[in-house]
Image (cartoon, rainbow over all chains, first blue to last red; front, top):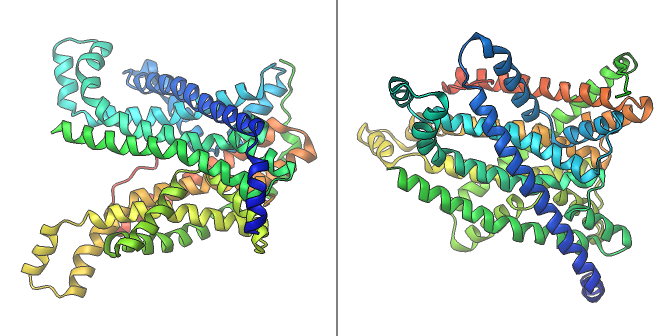
Length: 228
Length: 224
């Protein structure tokens, strides 16, 4: 088995295969990057909107809680299928990449809403009250009092969640987005040894994810140190 | 906007979907227990083991934590037959999920073990406790209390992760949803119901875990 693999390697790493792999890597990263940025903005806004006080905003708060709980408790694959068929059913002419992107945005939004909320809760309530006493509006309280303290709590889990999303987007291959996992399947179907096809994909994912994970750990340590 | 929602065509398949949910639960719990055993061994090695063993466990953990679970299962499913090991889809998913869970649970349990403070052990020594007493009255309750929330969290994540089994043709909840979709062609309805069942079973699991945590280890937790 080892010898046949060895013979296959030059046939596998041809110029076009490598270009294909790199393009797919770029697509995986684009999907994760754009999705998580929009998702973070969405989640941040949702976490802020959950702070609106009073009975008037009760439906809004209930809606946000429903949204957050729904997307955190449904598997990526099912959400993906739901949005895929939703776009199809309502005749929305969108590419599969867009479908995957919408899914990533929605799920990342729901998770970051929770992360940001935890960050807000980590700020002691006396700080909020101090802002209140200064007659700050909600926006001012967030901007001058809460976020300068909360971002250290928010950033590390948000970052590690985004790294996790690089791996989760592997499921987007199921609806036909040509990203890394899809390329692995294509190579496997072309008759390359699955050890080589999926091995190359695994190594590429590792090379992307590992440095980022290390950076996340480093950042978390630094932020924890700087808090005291 | 020309889609009419017909739930009535799908309702009669709900029992079938729920049967699939039982299989999802089975995969999740088996993989979780297997992962716990691997994690316990891995965490012990990482804390007490020699240099070589520690390196091996570190390599295993970092490999499985930094690659997608889906591709790992693909690898087991397609590449192991080349080495003469033939796995059924169910076995491949179970092996993949167990090994993946093992890596995450190693990290979680290691952090839990290291959270026992030296002053606690010294306090136990001052009280004249023997080693079994120290383990039973000091270390064990502490570790349980620290480990329970992240472990139950990971169990929920694993329940969601079982949906990957559908891709390999295991007929768990998502797999059955694909089947029902192929029979009825009511895609949106089928997947809304499936999503609802997932929300239901994870909320149920969260509630049970929170109550168990409160009752057994006095862990304060929230379902929502």
